[in-house]
Amino acid sequence: MTPTLKLVEQLISSASVTPQDGGCQNLISQRLATLGFACETIVSGPDDFSVTNLWAKRTASVHSSQAPAKTLVFAGHTDVVPTGPLAHWDSDPFTPSYRDGRLYGRGASDMKTSLAAFVVSIEEFLAANPNPSINIALLITSDEEGPAHDGTVVVCNQLKARGEVLDYCIVGEPTSVERTGDMIKNGRRGTMSGKLTVKGVQGHIAYPHLAKNPIHLLAPALAELTTIEWDKGNAFFPPTTWQVSNIHGGTGASNVIPGEVVVDFNFRFCTESTPESLQKRLCSVLDRHALDYDLKWVIGGLPFLTTPGPLVDAVRQAILDETGLTAELSTTGGTSDGRFIAAICPQVIECGPPNATIHKVNENIHLSDIEPLTNIYRRTLENLNRLANA
Image (cartoon, rainbow, N blue to C red; front, side):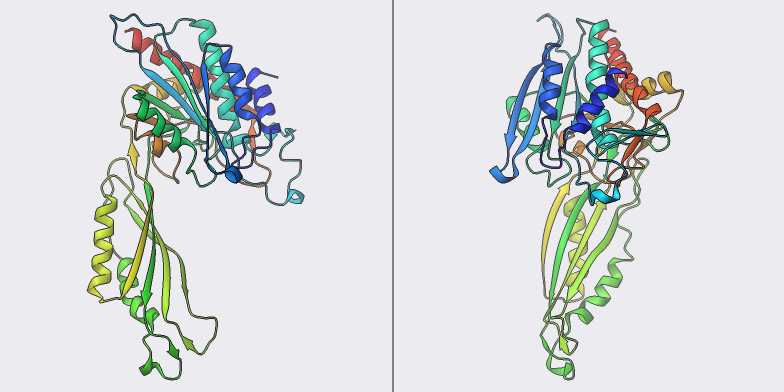
């Protein structure tokens, strides 16, 4: 039973279905406090949806004549998605269980193994480097799997207001595919959703000349939107995509022409486009088809990109030294809290265990993926500390 595995067991045993923390952050804070971290709990949200956030920082001892120490932040979340029907699980999702060389439990991959690896890697690093030249911090939330309104974004806004400077951030999202370290995310696409309401005139389906069918009116514009090339992407991002997620029209009766049709859609966009440019192009199509419409937009997050540099190099070297793998850089997948941190931190990457079982029944992680992750984080600390001393 390694220190990392023991802590993973403790974290899994703490049921923390979003937005609950289940005592996980208190457990982490106790470990960090003994290492000289100043730990601050930031609670946000209404009473019936209270979110717990942890900001913990250990400041390096730097003489006033020297340049300010760089700050590396480990970021993650203690909340997990609901389990679904317990009868579908082969073992209790909040009781760590072992089968065929794997650890089973909700959060095993997403992302309690990463949290445990953060803590143990810092403990090991500070044991060998009691006076490092870098600041180390952790930003942990219980609102990543939920709406994400009262979690990382709240902490980032407070840090920005305080003038806190962050230089590097590693988010512990499960980014690997086959083995820990084979892929890291050096950016994510932005997400923007729209709710389009196209208006017509309701009427009897047998008298279409007395009505105006909004579905028919929308169809040509919808067909055109599906063919648009929004951008070509770039060296790090695939092209921006536009997808319809839902269409609803009608009263439920088969003999009524609806008075309106509602379309939900989403852009996943790269750094070649902006929310403003995408909104303008989409509206131009609707206007050209002379539609009577309302349109509401929600920007879920802007794209971010960390090009190869100190942080990417430090992490990839750590992975190579630990596993022999050359980590692939990728920006695929959904969004993460990295989108909030990137607003106040110039270098953000995501690095974690394989993601094949995340959010699934019988979520698990292979035992062979746990210790390498701890060692990768520790080696990254060592690499950045050497860089600071160079």
